[in-house]
Image 1: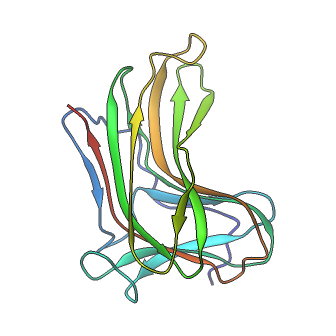
Image 2: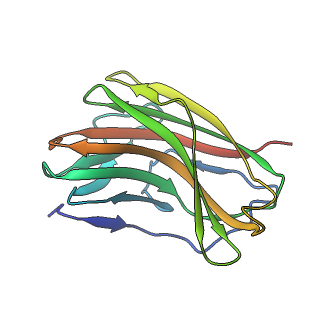
Length: 177
């Protein structure tokens, strides 16, 4: 059964990103990535063998009901240092014309969360598209240093979208030297 309101699968504990890149083509599983829906929107995910940009599988994220809310896809958290920059790149397509925004989410030393959206919105369609953006880790947010970060995308204000699917593949995060 695929009914899930809030889905988290295999969120790793924070890992150091020093000299290490994060990469996923979803060939074996979806470890280290999670989906989240707010409001009364219900989403789930699974590996897809029907659609892929690289290899033989991708991750499919799909809407299960006609609720309304936000849909998010994020990678596992990793340790960051103020002043670092990261390149985020992934392949994505949908079974409908949609708009998403890149998103970075910082866990701060005071245990609060700060979200930074990438503008402008990115148009997604039925063909594979490469999404790329850069995340600059700020020195602080109102005097509080960032400690961990995860990145991905969000689509806001979804409603009446039962059957909407996103396919994500070849997800990469690289430290910019």
